[in-house]
Image 1: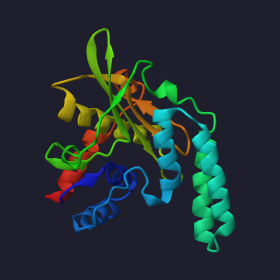
Image 2: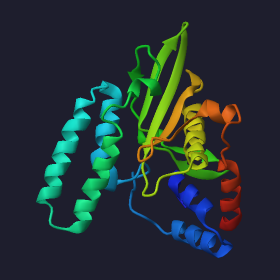
Image 3: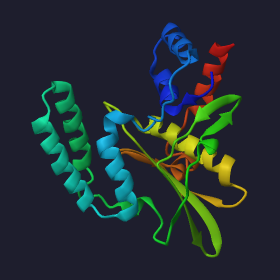
Image 4: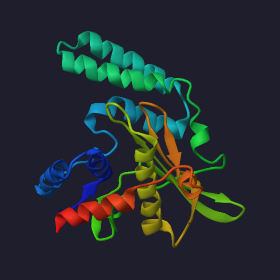
Length: 227
């Protein structure tokens, strides 16, 4: 297995029986095409791409404009599956028409970092994990160089808070593996957000014991089945 995604780990945790868990692991062993769909894939690209750019610009007019574009696409589409996809993306964007993106990041000036593929795979307890944050940004606070990140994710039916905690846990480990020598990680701004529900989990919630991450336990269970 070259790598496993965070959504794979969450799917593993949702499986109820040992047999279904083993089936998932066996499917993951099979070679697959390159997949950069951690945040929900192309199905959600119409909403996620707009949310991602608006996080930086904080110009919510782009959200309103994208809704209008997608309404036109619904009217032009002939297949129900396409109409449903556009409508679900519109429903997500409605959540962000007046959303205050500023509350997800520091109020000081930010520098956004590139996210090279060379940094996207981290190893946890011997398991290669793919991490695809939406944005990684640096900033200065009291002369301290700090770093934060946000990951917008989407899934039909949404994620539970404890599942978002897994995304956030992985994000923190990603920052620690790639940037801890140069920056101090700010747990308040290490955030995953489900764009379908607006639920979000910052790493400081995990540190404070307000929400638990089952990442380590899940990895242990996966590794046991890989033997």
